[in-house]
Amino acid sequence: MLTPLLRALILLAAAVFLLVLTWPQAFGLHNTWVVAHLVSFRAIAVIAAIVGLILLGLLRFMRPLRRTLSMAMVLLVLFAVANVGILASRGFTANAAQVSTGPAGTETDTVTVLSWNTLGDVPGAAVIAELALAQDADVVTLPETTEATGIHVAEMMREAGRPMWVHTLAFDLISKARSTTLLISPDLGDYAVTNAAGSGPPGNTNVLPTVVAKPVDGNGPTIVAVHAVAPIQYEMSNWRSDLDWLATQCQGDNVILAGDFNSTLDHMAGRANDNLNSVLGNCADAALSAGAAAVGTWHTSIPALLGSPIDHIMATVNWQVTALRVIESLDGAGSDHRPIVATLTPAR
Image: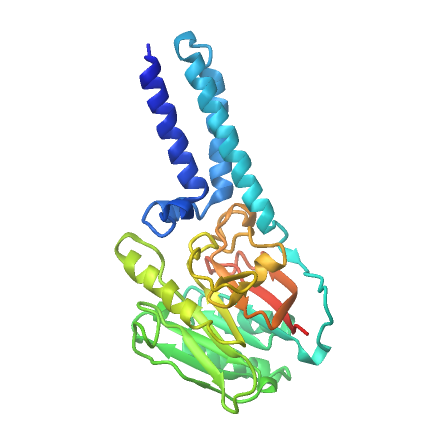
């Protein structure tokens, strides 16, 4: 039989554990190993809590533990409700539109940004090009995509009347994951890659390449095709460094970031400037603005509402989100990531 002191200690430890999993940034633990992984799957954590409630409910017939189990059930209910509330505040709509409260730009001012981690060219150039054409994309960011595939995509799009410039950075030619390709429509003007091809700050992310492209004439947004390393055990310091470096890429007034951040909004806590709605530097998250930030982009083997939203499109406050979509129809195309597409319009 549990003594009152032991019962209190067990329940206190459980409460602290669940509180940390609910809001780890309050304890500065959101970028630590294990916690960073667990908080990435809030919806699955809610399901686990419900399963725990059922199991504890079945065990409540054990009279000596009834009081302890009842209190543990209360903790699980609070945990589940809190996480559902956080997910609901971020939004569950995979096909979402954000209605502007101010004057919008003209249709020709809009920029449609598509991002897809292709898992090393796996879907193939034809599938990528078809998607980009279907979305009428002006900017396409393709982590884990080689230059050869990017050129092939651009050729197909050109044949369809939608030419694109191709910009690729590769840390090596051994692993396709070490290449990131960026396609930009000539309608946006001439762009040049301005960051270093070598890995690590101040010129790039540490393990996987990010492409920073700026308009040659200075008119237009800086476009950043993002690929941060995953927070696996031996890459935690590089992962944190990648997020810090990406925040510095959004210090300007006209920036668009898109790609595989390998991070949810929870992991970005503490890296935003004081601008309204910004989550990383001066950039706001398009999915959060559109009410779709709880829709998972990884892994395609599980439903989107249970997945982890680690692919993002972000922009400075001079852009407003008019539409956003997490594309689930290509879950069988071979990549472990879902494409995400956003339409941005100048805020006026």
